[in-house]
Structure formats: C-alpha cells, structure tokens
Amino acid sequence: MGPSKKPSFSGYSSVSNYDTFYIIKCVSDTNDNFSNVPPFLVEETITGNVPSTKLLRSGDLLVEVASRKQAQQILNVNFLSTISITVKPHDTLNTSKSVITYDMLLNLFNEE
Image 1 (cartoon, one colour):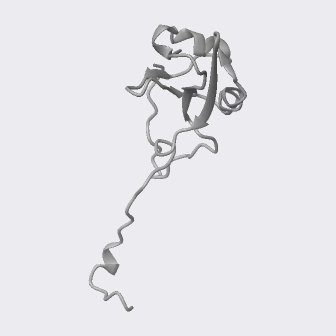
Image 2 (cartoon, rainbow, N blue to C red):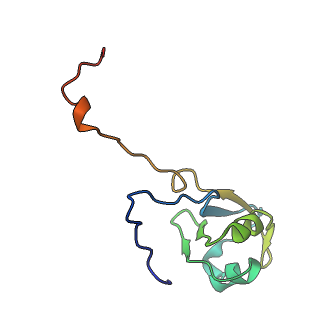
C-alpha cells in the first residue's frame, strides 16, 4: 500500500487538484462483468501501481489512483481487456464535508 502519510504540523493538509476515486462500468449489451477480470489489468491499462482496486456489489470497479497522470489516463480508457467500459469520477468519495467551529462564536446569536 505504500508509506502512510502523516499530517503536517501546521494543521493544514494538502488537497489534490484531481479526483482520486473512479468508477469503471461495463457498457456492453452482453452479460460481461468484472468478476473474471484480474485487478492487475487495471494497472497495466494505466501507468504504474494503483493504490486500490475493488469489485463493488453492483459489479462495477472502484479504482483509486495515485497521481494526476493516472487520473488523466484512466479517463481516456474505453476498453478493459475485451470489455467496453465507461469511467467517471466517484460521486461522493472525491469530496469532503466538515464543520468549522470557533469557540468565540459560541455565545453569539444567529442575527449577529
């Protein structure tokens, strides 16, 4: 999996400017799916090791990329082995939600 990343001391984290999680869907009319496709085939299709490739219950592949170059390459892939595919960024894994709190605002009213 590679070395683990430690958070910076400043409390700020760097944010990648590219999507890291992608969904690969089978678009052929036949009943082709990814159950017979080895995960290393994705690595051969794009350059280098990918951190994670998982087969989802829906039959789609969830792929995590490690670099901007891999993100650009995976979007241009149309075939995986003999299976016609579409690739799109994952809807929720590429976003983050957070709540920002500030203690001095705790006792203020909403109107202020």
